[in-house]
Image 1: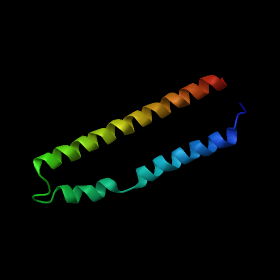
Image 2 (image 1 turned 60 degrees about the vertical axis):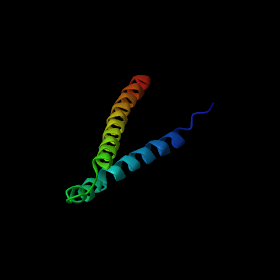
Image 3 (image 1 turned 45 degrees about the vertical axis):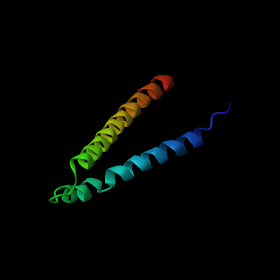
Image 4 (image 1 turned 90 degrees about the vertical axis):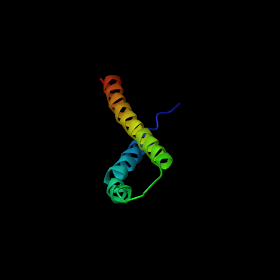
Length: 79
């Protein structure tokens, strides 16, 4: 199998762009005023939203750890 270095670079740059867009988005700033509204949600809805936020946090942490691992692996392969 041929090494498509340009294709791999394109994928890495796309991943970087996606993460950058997420970082630059103002999602939290949009959520905060909403969640402070009186009567915003029922206890069941609150539990659902909280579980979703916990899941997103877990995924974001895993993505960061995976990228750190990948950088280390790539450096070892090239060294």
